Amino acid sequence: MSRYLGFLSYLGTAYSGYQIQNGQITIQGVLEDRLSVLLKEDIKTKGSSRTDSGVHALSNAFHFDFEGDIPKALLKRMNALLPEDISFLGLHKVSDDLHARFSATERSYVYKVYCGKNPFYNGRAYRLLGFIPDVEKMNVAAELLVKYEDFVCFSKANSGVKTTLCDIKYAKWDSVNESEFYFNIRANRFLRGMVRGVVGSLLKVGKGVSSLDDFERMICAKKPYTADFSAPAEGLYLEKVIYKGINETL
Amino acid sequence: MSRYLGFLSYLGTAYSGYQIQNGQITIQGVLEDRLSVLLKEDIKTKGSSRTDSGVHALSNAFHFDFEGDIPKALLKRMNALLPEDISFLGLHKVSDDLHARFSATERSYVYKVYCGKNPFYNGRAYRLLGFIPDVEKMNVAAELLVKYEDFVCFSKANSGVKTTLCDIKYAKWDSVNESEFYFNIRANRFLRGMVRGVVGSLLKVGKGVSSLDDFERMICAKKPYTADFSAPAEGLYLEKVIYKGINETL
Image (cartoon, rainbow over all chains, first blue to last red):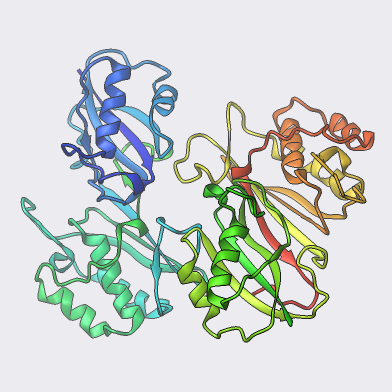
């Protein structure tokens, strides 16, 4: 039996999130279905990051175990079988103890917001109504994220999670132009709902309805559900999942 | 009676092109319908560029005549009424003799191609199968476009067109990364089907199935329908239409 680590890119719009669910069309469901057809046995995968309904991924990872030989043309054949909104990026043979979720050393997300109607961003970014965020102020708040460790306030639910500590290595807003802004965040791990909570709360600072002090107090209070989770799924992109020794460029 | 010049942005995927047609959903049809509702009279517009079915526009222009007062909130109200894939960018009061089509001094297009499956480009760029184009070679060919004047070879149909002369001011491919390439072209005017003919023919050079000599011979032969029109609508974006004295940034 060998273990394989695979990478996928997808537009999340048409899916009820990554994780398999009965009666719902999910990324994992479609993936396992196509893999099982091509490898001629029932393939079960473990995902790295359970992106929510409507969330996109530039690259998400999963692993599975398989006894036989992987066909050389698997990548090409998977992409022919998978729908247009899911792309199979690559497959690595890895050691048996590598786990797509637990072995990941780092994950990065991008969150895209824009002001003003834009047909090309519809469903692919979050449209801010009635204000242009103060990026400088949001970046002062974002720097606090790198300083702190316990992020229970940005967590929607932590059932089964042993710790709410996350090592945030990078958190910064960039202006693409005067009406488009991208937030990049990188950490060893994220809690459930965390990135959307971070973005919603930072946008409150950028709108001027929360102060920097409010933001810091929220983190220090260490209570769950206190963040603003209003940032919708359509603006969120899982960018990359990093594993030690696995070349990230496929 | 006053004349107004308006600008629109749209994702062309869901529409049977720009120009109004009976029984088809077109950009112009939707535009006139919403303008007529808001201005409370039957508004007829003249478009600058009749983009084909599935072609997108970052900014396309149109004009119309109207006697009454334009409501101050027209922009906002139009964007509330228009579907998510069409955005009303702005409106200028102009002189009575300005014509959206004939007064335009310059138009620019972008054509996007990519190699490899990409869920985010689906319907928004042309996927090249089985080859990565030689951008350097395509740019040598593109330089010839700026040198010549008569482009009948890139024209699909010219009924009613008095001349096939176009003053191409700029034509160049740029690599976004190793698998995405954008072609930018700017001219005083374009013939019908011309940009797709130019792109299809340049890609043949980039693939190595046409030589630079073949490309130049095709231009010099001055025969219609000789270009390769296989470049699909979904990769094409009308970028901008320029008018003298009208500020392009709205």
